[in-house]
Length: 172
Image 1 (tube, helix red, strand yellow):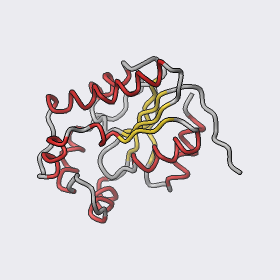
Image 2 (image 1 turned 90 degrees about the vertical axis):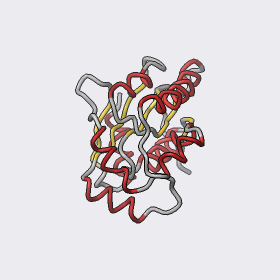
Image 3 (image 1 turned 45 degrees about the vertical axis):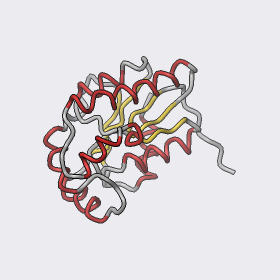
């Protein structure tokens, strides 16, 4: 029987553009570690989901309550001394700053990969509100993880299990 890997009580944000594997990787990390798991998309109000589904990207004003809700969820877990994993695009440093304000143990995993690979994944994906046409706007908005931000950038061309292995091996 596999026991969950124990990590110190950190709050982990798995970020990247649509199709990078955020939800898959976050779920695997939570499964292996026993951390609480949240899907960032679940924090969007219905109006934002409808906007994106219609092909319109969100602006910073529309993103603000979404980021605040995710940060609140992370803060609650941090206050209880629990580890937590959330998937969230967190494309800009300013967005990640909001999430990192949830506590000193927030770490970021940036899942990064080539545009063509992620466009292919999105074209094959069914049942998700995010249309493939918005991928270009996400890449345009993306500010990669900076060297002074606590976390790691991971190549998504590897299988999800290998990505998770790398995350768990390299994060403090």
